[in-house]
Length: 166
Image 1 (spheres, rainbow, N blue to C red):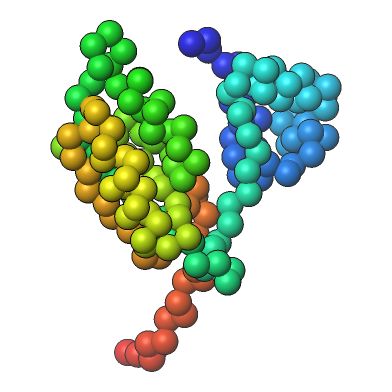
Image 2: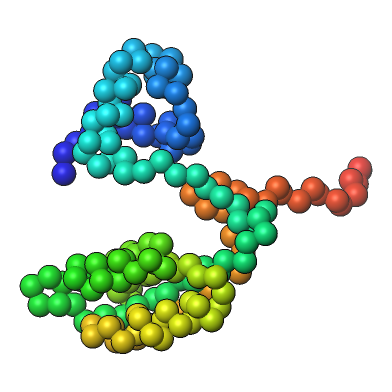
């Protein structure tokens, strides 16, 4: 793993806030040339530090009934490959959005998306649980997202208490 320059770290911070920022604006904000910023971004992309530019969507504002679940998975690591082989088998399923190796009571946290509860339940029972290395699963359905990737979805409620003066 190589150490990133201060410029690249600053570029990453600004792009995390808003990936649509133009390199010219980034250059102005950082006090460097737009060529330096463009070169830094190109290197970050080439080195797979930046792997994708994504849009964070507040799905509660859409008429979309998708269901998201977080699944705790306990597994038996594979000899010689540890958790890598089973993690790869799991993340290749199209329903799987994310897979994380965890410390604590379970080994992997798997984020799954489906059209409805039945589809997610079917994925767990028909595809995930039967995998040879999987010892157990525990599924948690997301009911509402308040904040994701540092973005708060709901406007804070207005304080409706009456002011009391001394």
